[in-house]
Image 1 (cartoon, rainbow, N blue to C red):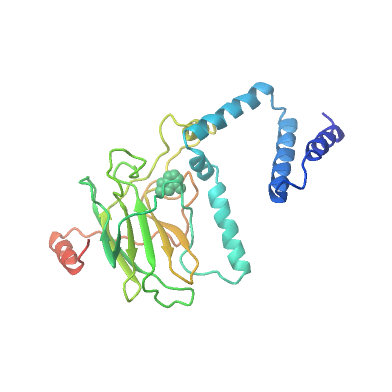
Image 2 (cartoon, rainbow, N blue to C red):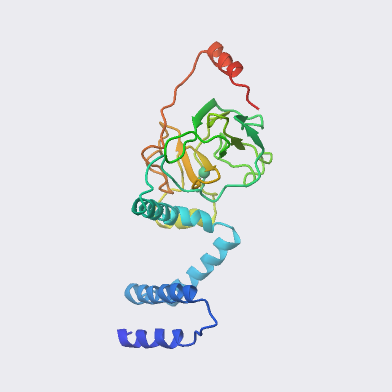
Length: 276
Ligand code: MBD
Ligand code: FE
């Protein structure tokens, strides 16, 4: 089709829109339709290909996999990079880097002050301890900040999405103590992979890609008067560390891990830290 004919059709479609609509939605949708018309034209997309795509989108929605696809196609990481840029422009850079939330957060995890134990289900895996301090943009500790932590089990599954786990297993909310500190005990997670046979896997396979994330632990950090931090840490040494299907690994989010083989030292550590 020639460019004028396409432009005329776009004009005709847009001319049906009125002031009763939402101008932002009108502008964004019109732009997407224009870009898709151009893609169909330039790639000579055939009707059967178009309707197959419509069927795919329908199925992906039915499976609740759109959040996963957004991560896998790099949209979620792209939004992060844009937020980084916006903060830089506003002179608000620094601190722990953000990275994607992903589609597996669940609100309402049990809350405790200072410390928590996340592994409520009896499951295999290495014991993991993590501790840290929440600091504001000026570097001063933030007492009473809420640190929400969630991660996968030894099979890469998340409670609520994996029916074999009890509700809120490997999910906790920890209030920082008077020094802004938090600490927790859990089990070392294993990297998540997209559901076998699902819509995301289907698409990734057609792209010749894998759907695996390196082992990671998610965090939301919130406190009154501060911006919310959404981030993760990665478990060093994972073969997928820099090959994340969701592109979320970043410098500064791969903390040094220390292996403690000495059982006595581990027990002493537990006594020293009364985990919930
Ligand atoms: C995850 O566990 C995750 O963190 C992301 C971003 C996408 C899918 C699964
Ligand atoms: Fe995750």
